[in-house]
Every structure is written in C-alpha cells, then in structure tokens.
Amino acid sequence: MARYNFSLREVRALATLVLIGPITVFFILPKLISMTVVSTVIAIGIWLFTCNRLARGPIAPFYGPTQLQGKTCLVTGGNTGLGRETALALAQRGADRIILACRDTKKAADAVGYITATVGPALKTRIEVRGLDLGSFESIRKLAASIAADGHPIHILVNNAGVMNSPYRLTADGFEEHIGINHLGHMLLTLELLDNLKQNKARVVTVASSGHAYRNQSRFPSVDSWLYPDRQKWIGMDRFWQYCNSKLANILFTRVLQSKFGDSGATAYWYVWLLCHINQIIGRTRF
Ligand SMILES: NC(=O)c1ccc[n+]([C@@H]2O[C@H](COP(=O)([O-])OP(=O)(O)OC[C@H]3O[C@@H](n4cnc5c(N)ncnc54)[C@H](OP(=O)(O)O)[C@@H]3O)[C@@H](O)[C@H]2O)c1
Image (cartoon, rainbow, N blue to C red; front, side, top):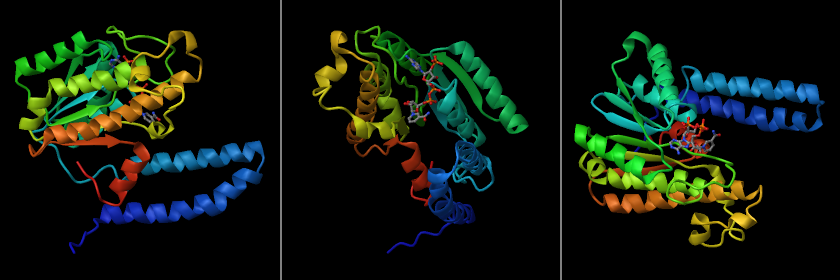
C-alpha cells in the first residue's frame, strides 16, 4: 500500500486540531451550556478569534505548497466574500491571470485593489474584471464568447457566486433566482467553457453548501418545482429550502460534469467548506 508522507505543515495542522478538538468538546461546550450570557459571548469570541488566527497563521492548512505559475483562473463573484478571498489565495500562489467575473464591476475593481495591496510587491498575477450576471443567459454567453475571442485558456474555474435567502424573484430568463443564479447560471457558464476546460485539463470547483442536505422534498417535490415554484404559495421559509435545493443541484451537476470530462484530464469538484478543509488538513486534496 502506498504511504502518504505528511508535510510539516500538515502535521502542525493536525496537531492543532487534536488540541482544539478536545478543548472544544470537553471544556468549551459544557461551559457554554451552563455559563451566563456574558461568559458565553466571551467564550465564543475566544473560539472565533482562535479559528481566525489559525486560518491566517503559518499553520493554516489552506496555504499548501502548490504554485500556480502559468495558470489562468476564473472566479465568479470574485468581488467580495469567499470569492474575493479565493482570488487572493490564487494570486498568493502565483497564478498567471485571474479573471474576476462579477455583476458589480465597481466592487470588483475594489477587490483588485485589495488583492494587489495584500499580496504586495510579490504580485505577479494579472487580475482582470469582466461583467457577468449569472441571472442572464445572454450575459453568461457574452462572457464565454469574450474569453474565447481573447484565447484565454481556463485552468481553474471557481463557480462561487451565489444568492441565499432571496425573496421570490425571477432571473431574466424566468427561473426562480436561487436555482437560476446558483445552479443554472453556473451550469451554462461551465458548459459554454467546456471545450476550453477539457483542452486545458482544468479543475472546476463549484461552491456548494452543507445546506444541500436540507433540501425540502415536500415543498419542492420535483425539479420542475425547483425551477418554477408557485409564487402564490411562496412563504418566508421557502427561500431557505430553495437555496438548499440549488446547492444540491450544484453537487449533482458536478457529478454530471465529471462524466462529461471523460478521460480529458479535467476534473470537477464541489466544495463544502468544512468537509473540504478537513480533507485538506489530512492531505487528501490539493490544488
Ligand atoms: N458564507 C458562508 O457561510 C457560506 C456557507 C456555505 C456556502 N456558501 C456559498 O459560498 C458562495 C459565496 O458565498 P459568500 O458568503 O462569499 O457570499 P457573498 O459575500 O454574499 O457574495 C456573493 C457573491 O455572488 C455574487 N452574485 C450574486 N448574484 C449574482 C449574479 N446574478 N451574477 C453574478 N454574481 C452574483 C455577488 O455579486 P454582487 O456583489 O454583485 O452582489 C457576490 O460577489 C455562495 O455560493 C454561497 O452559497 C457560503
């Protein structure tokens, strides 16, 4: 059986988990149950601070050794939140070019400033902003056409953008927004880029959510009802269930995509932060 050699970084990350795990389970959790509100807030604050330091510090498992020189990456919704931090991490690994495909291009320009300032003089990456409204098939096709026209290879596609808990709204093409933007939009974008992705043995990462497990089958029993839920019956909770449905659709699409890639060498992944980070910590997945 092949042996896996843990790097020093991974050993440190594991050791940290081994320390933090028991402290959380045996010390913090029982205290949370019995302590006053003030001390609970303090405990949560300390816990969040520790997690934050771990994620940023030298033992963070997300900063693996892999470098991305020569790679072109496209991140949807790279103007804020997880998308912006993903773009930053790709730039820190020396990606050649990062395309931030965003609806709000002004915010995207600010994100370029943030990444440039954070990486500093070491930055070798060209960061481009391109308009993309995932709620419009026309906009998606326009972006794909512009990438084809420029002849950019896509080595890494991060399908990150998403809406959560939106009120009942339709995309430009008449689909409910959660399923339309989170799933259909990314599906169309990926399929429009399919040949490019296959030729470049790309990695496609679609950001799903643990929420995929909570899809509501009684309220949305069929895929048809995911696409066209009944406006008259739409109530507050439906937006959450529909978000979960869209995230399940992300995962199901990833499976189909991997089969479409066949033996081209391209790979499709879905990502749920906790599972993925644990996998990274134990060294199973890497860029
Ligand atoms: N944060 C979490 O705890 C968490 C947990 C599980 C899963 N996720 C998933 O992680 C991904 C990113 O989450 P986040 O927390 O970083 O969200 P966020 O901060 O709200 O950012 C969402 C991004 O999606 C973009 N977006 C929304 N609608 C769009 C559209 N029609 N066309 C193009 N872009 C659009 C937004 O662009 P604008 O700036 O133009 O609005 C923004 O860039 C999402 O897919 C989310 O479901 C997040």
